[in-house]
Image (cartoon, rainbow, N blue to C red; front, side, top):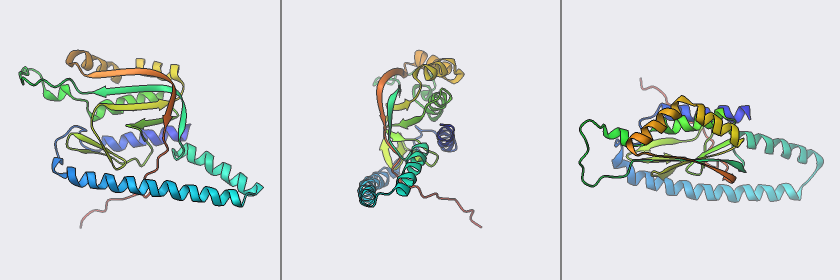
Length: 228
């Protein structure tokens, strides 16, 4: 569980280095992003087919040594987020304030106060992890150390897929401990206060059965090289 927690915190740190989730920058990239999302969906489907073929080959050549290796691999995949996990947990939903078609916004109100931002999602994810969450997903995409999370205009790109608010965060783990962590987190206090003041949506619900999918996107790491 310690390794998994470190992975997920690392993923949120990646988000922190990005721009605001609701920034309008990059809005002209929407078509490119949609094309990329379609490509990712095809590759994910192909990846699942290949994994099924590997499983069949393993079953055909079963041995005690292979069983041991398979068990070790399965345990490592669970820790790394490469296996789905289900169980009791919490669902946190975040959404912007309702749209006002009149446009009669008080000059004393910053429009950004009416939106869910990157830091709001980070606050929730980190509080859940601090409460012992064993697995976390954002918009049903597993969050791991190399999760690809980017802002594209008013949408969110997660692991190659495009999403709009409301943003749904799910966590499997000790329910009471996670609830306590949310309740005692100062960042959550601020989020609740903003929600009450500016009509943002923040809701936490308990569930006896939550399914968090495995991370099935590319595992390749990419590094930026400075231009000389």
